[in-house]
Image (tube, rainbow, N blue to C red; front, side, top):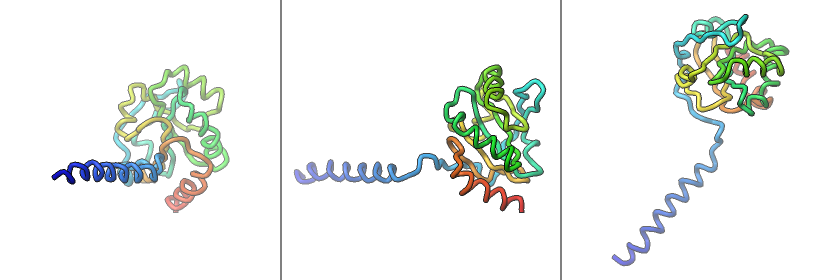
Length: 176
């Protein structure tokens, strides 16, 4: 019995240490999404820009495109912004956006400063639509196929390496 009292804490410690060691080997940017290969959630958002288009689930059918969830107060969004600009301008990829819990005037100022890669921007001021998409935080970017299904998700800023290794090959494959 005495031996069990000494061994039990050691066994518990070993199990916990193994669990945490396994957790340290995982990539934190790879967050599973229950929505992969499922249709985008039904939604309709008003336009962020007065002369621009809003965004609705119906807008995400008919061609392969990206949806980027961003905010002007988001520092990683500033890091990925030039990558999104290149995708839209140089690669000709349609990029649409959900502006997450942002003051419209701040978001407009931010787009005026850095450029606007988005063909449509929906204002999600209360964050409900983003929650339905499974957004953990901004930025997040989704590849949407022509049938309006989510095919790939990037948590965190889209980096050039991610574009070359995953996003562009997937878009080419989906475009057939």
